[in-house]
Amino acid sequence: MKTKITELFGIEHPIIQGGMHFVGLAEIAAAVSNAGGLGIITALTQRTPADLANEIRRCREMTDKPIGVNLTFLPIVNQPDYPGYIKALIDGGVRIVETAGNNPVKWLPGLHEAGIKVIHKCTSVRHSLKAEAIGCDAVSVDGFECGGHPGEDDVPNFILLPRAAEELKIPFVASGGMADGRSLVAALALGADGINMGTRFIATKEAPVHDNVKQAILAASELDTRLVMRPLRNTERVLNNEAVTRLLEKERTLGAALQFSDIMAEVAGVYPKVMQDGAMDAGAWSCGMVAGLIHDIPTVKVLIDRIMAEADEIIRGRLAGFVSA
Ligand SMILES: Cc1cc2nc3c(=O)[nH]c(=O)nc-3n(C[C@H](O)[C@H](O)[C@H](O)COP(=O)(O)O)c2cc1C
Figure 1 (cartoon, rainbow, N blue to C red):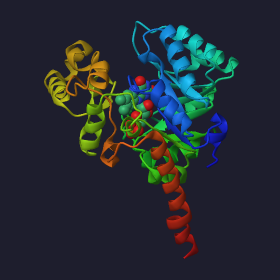
Figure 2 (cartoon, rainbow, N blue to C red):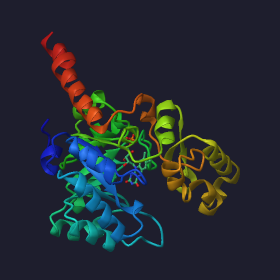
Figure 3 (cartoon, protein in one colour):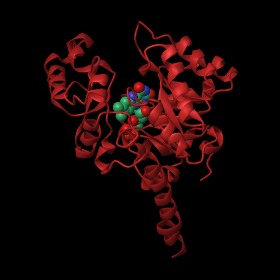
Figure 4 (cartoon, rainbow, N blue to C red):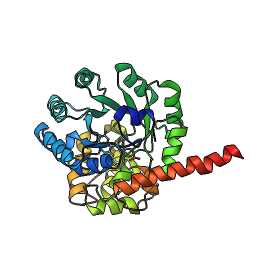
């Protein structure tokens, strides 16, 4: 399939694997890129720029297809060594960067000078337009359904995507709630040029996480996620568990007095415990409502081939049938 996104990134299928903390390692990124999509390594999971350089090298040993790196700009005082991570990815020959979180304007000139294409993840039309205005090459429009940080506007993709299509000139992919060929066709119909998936890619054979995580996604329905940290305006959609129940109880009882320090036990240092050790109640970890649509653990290639075949069948079969009738 050819879209503005496949053209921009030089990939075969318009399917991106979004950055995911402690999931977006070399193994999954290489598997997605080898299957014709765009695999993305998550920079901040690597403790140092040297570790990121090594992870890029590892990924390069597994694929010669385009890969990307996610740079999540955090709203914290003690900032990670972003210049170091950027140097590592440029030196590693990476030509695609997915930015997320705070406005990436400060980093764009350096990235563009190095010939890098930047896709910024946005949860609103207003942020998407800002990304376009500062010179991003594309956006990933992340609806309210998404795993991770959906922002504070709560606009689901059935509204957000066509609104983005009404306003944007640069291409965008639909992110949040994407799982299969139906998602891809719907996203294209709503004006996107591809899809970005997080949660769906965790439940694959190559995802380098504990099997407990994959089984938890399989067992979850669309009713099993919760929004945490809303009082801190840092809303995150996570899979419900004991820690999340505790966290929400603290949010209820403390109300407006809630501080980040009150919920440290439920949100700090959780990802290695969940993703590597399989300690499913260790704390709050991101998961999308799309868990309700995930019923198997295929290889990445089987998943991507299936999405493309299903999309083809829907477009040529079901949809074409409506217009010729
Ligand atoms: C476990 C997990 C960790 C994530 N970590 C990050 C991250 O570090 N940076 C980022 O930009 N997005 C992160 N995301 C968001 C994804 O890149 C993607 O935008 C989101 O998962 C899309 O929604 P979906 O899960 O419904 O597919 C994460 C998502 C999940 C499920």
